[in-house]
Length: 280
Image (cartoon, rainbow, N blue to C red; front, side, top):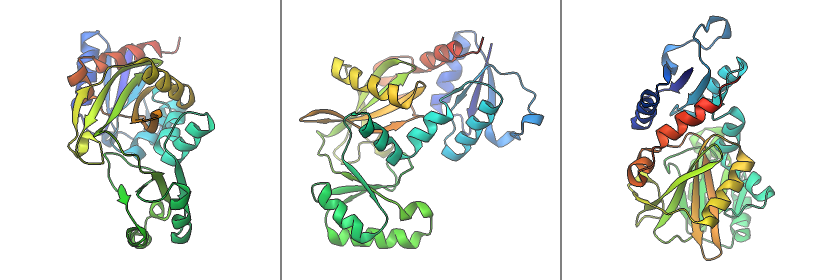
């Protein structure tokens, strides 16, 4: 059996997958997106299943669509990518399926944004792009003056994405959030991401620590998986007085810190899951 590893840069995460493949005697085909022409008539390599690990969401999605067109299973699928890579769509799906998530709004101009703030309970609110990672381009908005300035700046940035104002209620966290790793149907492990900053992301200097999996955390993440689909997911969870709420779901989540602090071999979990996805 051959597992294709689709990537743009071999980070530690991808190297952990390669190590797990070698440990389990699984043949790996490295597929660097910068070195291939993704035309079906030109593709000659034999591969049974593909694990998508591109940094670029755009490159990753095109690669997933390509291999799916060849009838090759991809982890995670294009359906999962579409659900995860648009944060507004993720929020809609979670709300529709009665999964606790952060109250949100989506508007296209300043006047509606001010109305949306009231619907979210007032300031502060969080303004973020509908697509993105690593805590980039996220703003905590404390008053009308800040909102007006941010909307004006977005209007002049040019990108159509900046014309979309996706807003969330600001949740006061206990100095941390939780990243849960799910592989297939299995809730594998979780970490706390601790920081004094309101953005709790390890890419923004948050410290990773092991988080025990309790029954409520497992239950809510299993519900998310049923809605989003089975693959490799990184689910971001906030702790509130009313219980756990889902913030975002990631379909190509980094896991090096997860593996380091939990001791769970996530790379091996991914490889073993990939083996099971081979079409008979």
